[in-house]
Image 1 (cartoon, rainbow, N blue to C red):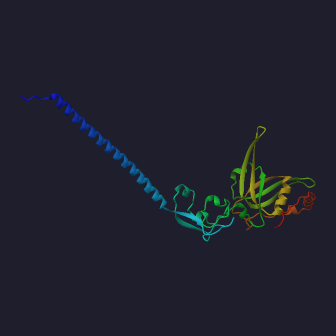
Image 2: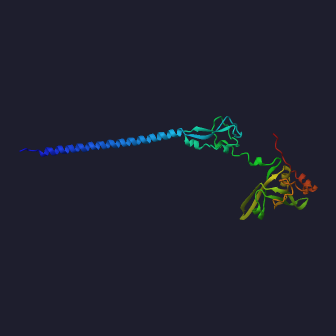
Image 3: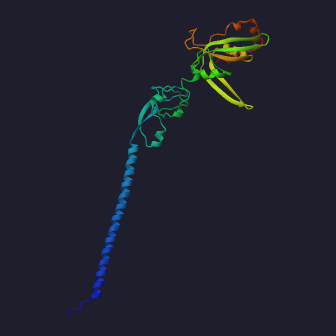
Length: 271
């Protein structure tokens, strides 16, 4: 009869099982570690490819062809749209590739050759600014007055007559149309409270000659002004400008008052 040592056999069997599960656990750990490493490599390669794509991408930007001095207008002769590889996209976003936006504008600083053109490099005032719209021999004049109900009917570009209700010492009272058929260049309403009272005033702007401004400022001391709105088709004068002051100004008493008032225009130095 064979005597089997079951205790020893059971121990050997348990040891084999432990070795098997230990081997299986090690394989799982290695597989997991390989997956993690592979995932990290994929992310790294993806980022590397993105950086290469950005560095190899060409963007259209505006640059100077040569040196441009301060105040010099930008034209197709001194600026150009260039295609370049830009590594820093955030820096490119600040640039402008619209050539038509810059053409005709004047530079605000000196620019060297191959400089990028930024919005900050150009002057905000372009060739259509108000001073350059003023006709030669004229001045843009602003007159403050209370318009009342007619203010609601006025618009920039309307034609009006300016009426003065005068009370001049040494002459007396008079009502005169001092300017006819003038075009309003600007119109502004100013509302304010003073000692619990509501006051509304307006300012109108239009083009006048220096002599007309001189007379208007003189009359402003002795007159209240009113406006009369004209039909835009009622142009008795073909000139779209202020008509000279009427014969009232030619009165000898008025001439003496103006002369004795010592009002004069002081011209600046001619350059």
